[in-house]
Length: 195
Image (cartoon, rainbow, N blue to C red; front, top):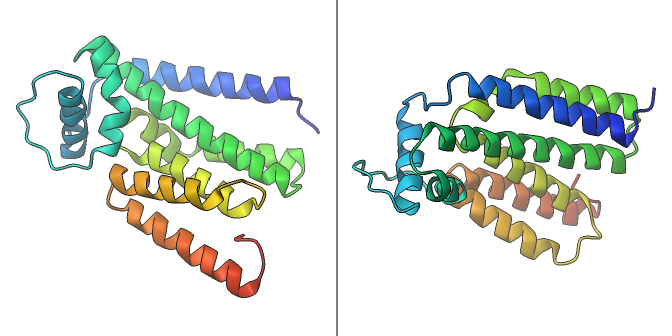
């Protein structure tokens, strides 16, 4: 069974609407220290006073700060943060779908892989928790694409920029960089593509 672009777009639209519906039930932070750290930094960057001192990494906060500039510290802002997380998840699934297509995985298997990824708990949880995990997932997907595709101009520049941003998002982003460098070295030693 081959799915058309229209059918795949419909699946992505339904997934997005599902995420928004789930997120709109109670669009408030769960009040874990990570969330308070990221949100208070973003609110501060958005021009609002914040009484919380935070040492959390700034990358995710920089991404969501414009939401606080536009909506202030409101429930609407939290709903839009959920939408940003959902967009990161869907974009990463799109990047993986492109890689699977490039590797000539048939459409049925691609749909099964992408659908199962979309239905896993982590996708739903990272959409509604205000953590940088969805953004890190997108960065990992983009790095995988850059490592797997040879014909990207300035590949190392884009990869280095992504890896630097990954570290700015969260210190564990350093592990993404180590994995990418290891993949590049391994691909040079074996004279094959990074994957």
